[in-house]
Image 1: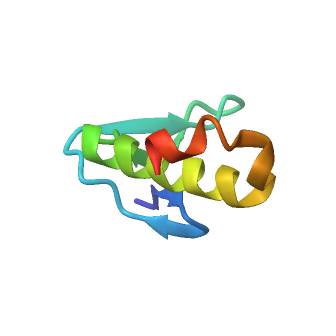
Image 2: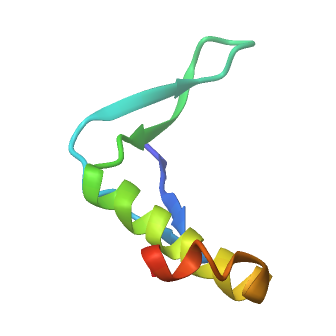
Length: 70
């Protein structure tokens, strides 16, 4: 069964979670993939990476908010 991974920092990354959720083809009802639920650590990593990327992108426009989270 193909597993759908998290997409963090431009890469497909396996989740550290343990619970699998099936993905079904709505036309046939057949299970076509599964996704592993993200762990809190996965979510925090994604938020941190996204925030750093945002700060690099907007630079001085977010100077008041970026230093608090980077």
